[in-house]
Length: 140
Ligand SMILES: CC(C)(COP(=O)(O)OP(=O)(O)OC[C@H]1O[C@@H](n2cnc3c(N)ncnc32)[C@H](O)[C@@H]1OP(=O)(O)O)[C@@H](O)C(=O)NCCC(=O)NCCS
Image 1 (cartoon, protein in one colour):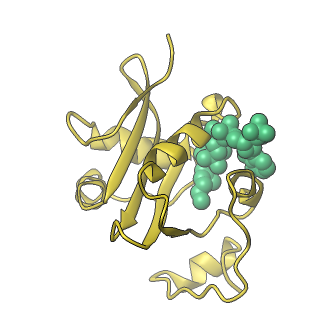
Image 2 (tube, helix red, strand yellow):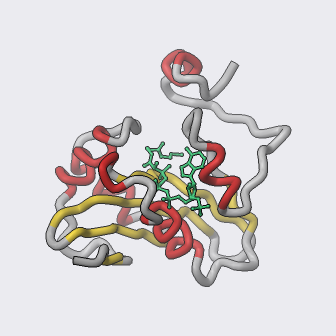
């Protein structure tokens, strides 16, 4: 069955979102927090294999000139088959006039390079769990 993309939050199983992020090695929270975060996003994308959630992502944007991507994840057994690219392209459709920023998980920079992103020289972040993020390789 082909992988289907959904671009709204209707019927999303937020426990599955939590499990997906966890299995992909991403930060994860209580399902209700993911519901609030995805519902507050400018655009969302969920990838399904049949009824099973296998990928997700969301964009925050003013819809005019600035956008940021978060929670881009594909279940490990589905990685490397173009799902991540489809998620990012779907999230950014219609936002062509916007700058787009994100912080890549260490080791995933090549994925974003393929999608036209370049390393920033002055990126700054104030993380809530600063020590944990430094340990994971996001900051010095
Ligand atoms: C990063 C991630 C979303 C990529 O999704 P994916 O479905 O595996 O990627 P795709 O198959 O769409 O790859 C698109 C292109 O990027 C390349 N690519 C994918 N991951 C890459 C990596 N880690 N390094 C270099 N290139 C990579 C692919 O080879 C492909 O190249 P091609 O267009 O020349 O064939 C996925 O690996 C993932 O969920 N990882 C764990 C969670 C994570 O780190 N998310 C990113 C948070 S910032």
